[in-house]
Amino acid sequence: MALTSSEASLLVQDALTGRLPDQRIPDQGLGGLVASDLIRNELLLDGSARLNLATFVTTWMPPMGAELMADTADKNMIDKDEYPQTAAIEARCVNILADLWHAEEGPATGTSTTGSSEAAMLGGMALKWRWRERMRAAGKPTDKPNLVMGANVQVCWEKFCRYWEVEPRLVPMEGDRFHLTAPEAVEHCDENTIGVVAILGSTFDGSYEPVKEISEALDNLAATGGPEVPIHVDAASGGFIAPFVQPDLEWDFQVPRVQSINASGHKYGLVYPGVGWAIWRNKEALPEDLVFNVNYLGGSMPTFALNFSRPGSEVIAQYFIFLSLGRNGFEVVQQASSNVAQRIAHEIGGMGPFRLLTDGSELPVFACALNADVKNYTVFDVSAALRERGWLVPAYTFPENRQDLSVLRVVVRAGMSEDMADLFLNDLRAVTEKFEALDEPMPRLTEDRQGFKH
Ligand SMILES: Cc1ncc(COP(=O)(O)O)c(C=O)c1O
Image 1: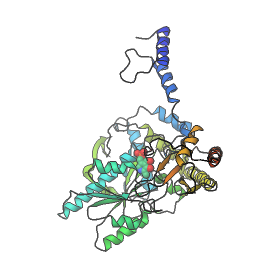
Image 2: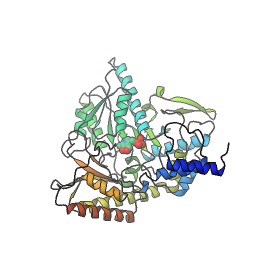
Image 3: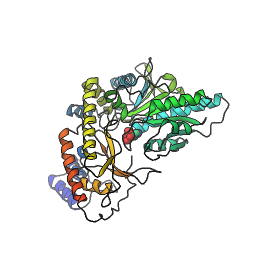
Image 4: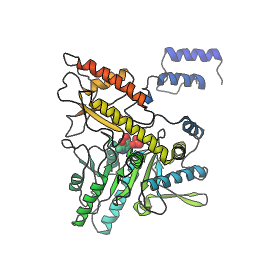
């Protein structure tokens, strides 16, 4: 039953002076206008997405793309029979990415996902299945699979290992080595290794792991009687950066051991959350019994995903981005982010108290620490002070073995203009000058410093 306007305003008053329901559905609905107003008010407390230098995820899309997403919000990606053109658009995106990442000739093998985490699960499962086939064929036990990766992996890989009962072999950081390198990768492999995960680039500092070197070191291992170990590249961010900013870098299917790649369409793929991609080098790299066939337009559409229903609009938006930017537009947009990141990094490096760990020349992302002689404040203080101006810049400690190291990380994405970079640098300079003038240490912050999730 519709509310009279006086009933509605009483409810609004109640809601404004009291509390919004957070335990049970309200007995009386507020109506769409009032409910949306109250929710919008509450969301004012969220940080501003455009000032969020913490996230890798897209916070700005061209309005036309956002409109297209809103217009296609009713499409379910799994309804391939009912929405055959959405399915066709997904297949085109898979072809485009397979081509961009130099997959083998022939039909492209891949799928859209809800993000890189789901894509990582799929890539990891394919590795596990193929390892098990190899071991069974050799009459060997299959109860102790392991996956080799740097301790800098994103949490999705630890999840993969726990959910699919694979031992995570996390190679610790050591000194100034903040990611996986070839010798350490090989050292941790044995015949139970389902694969090595190489990251392009690391969530901690934006650096690229040396995929080609890791592959060559694994070639040597195999040539000297060791196991054949495949590589999965977690290119959550780099999959949409390297082809445009470092086109000569060999990190993808040009490297023979790379069997599968994941990337987040909603990171440098420039689409709002959540879309990701998993692509295999060829049909053989994806075991057939992981694929379910759905009848589609009289044909058979292979699906390999953890979810059944999920939005089609993100996939449509990904195709929009491919069409509207083209290769040339991607080069311009990603190079601009790279330039902004490198300029901010360079200026921060010159401010005095900061030491750069990376400089934004791989991903448009960098991390910096405070010099050892800075005693009166920490990166956590800098992060908190920047937040007062609206900038969200995470401070966090590195993992095991380098927990002594605390850094600030800046992620530059499309939408961070040179002007915004100046505003950010001005604010950071002001904060730093204030802290540098302190005569005694700041009181230590009590927040949970382990709370930041990569
Ligand atoms: C290297 C890497 N892998 C995986 C992920 C997880 O990606 P998603 O948020 O798309 O699930 C991230 C997210 O930051 C990442 O940086």
